[in-house]
Image 1 (tube, one colour):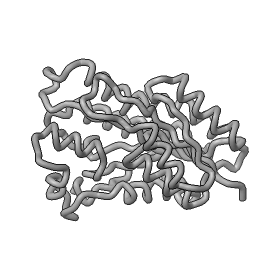
Image 2: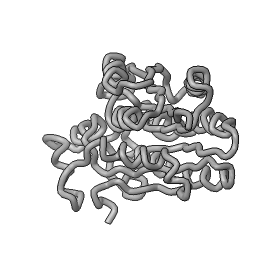
Image 3: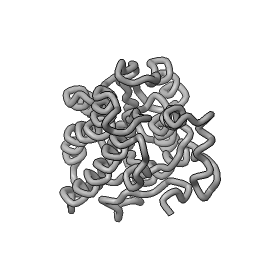
Length: 261
């Protein structure tokens, strides 16, 4: 069987970086995509070019970096085109890029922050789907294409002072269900994971927004009593990316330490 190929956004750190490493370990060729630039609307740093380069180096195998902003449809189309140029096609697209902002009631959150959250977390997934799904469908039958996204426990729980984030992640869950129905019998499936409190820069920023001393303060919300490691979420994404997950589509899989219970 030829090497399966994947594209992962938000690849410089967090769940995206862990997913790149996991897929590379399993023999995938991976295009690791990240914007590698701060956003003036957001009060915390984004992943850097150095972090993305380190992910590529440590992953080993056939992994390449690509700088692109998920908010730009043309940039997503260019990323997909690069994957097809390098490896002759695309089998898996994973939308892991995400940001967070808030800390105030919805009506008090600066509009620039609200826009950034909605544009990255929801429209970024839409833009990747519009570019990647046609590429997945260009693979000859029988296909085993996978479009995957990172939703959140915030898709089903109302989190105070994070209304835009909740709205965006709920939108991701709805998008995945619709794509699953639309793709039907094509051999391409659409699924998502819904992480709980995971040890990432987004969780660290969440702690700051809630005036908590550190991200570890969120651990008590989960029956497991600990934060999740990004690698644990990546492991489920890697399963969904594989051929053994062919019976799943339109699913939003909790990887949340029991937070949704």
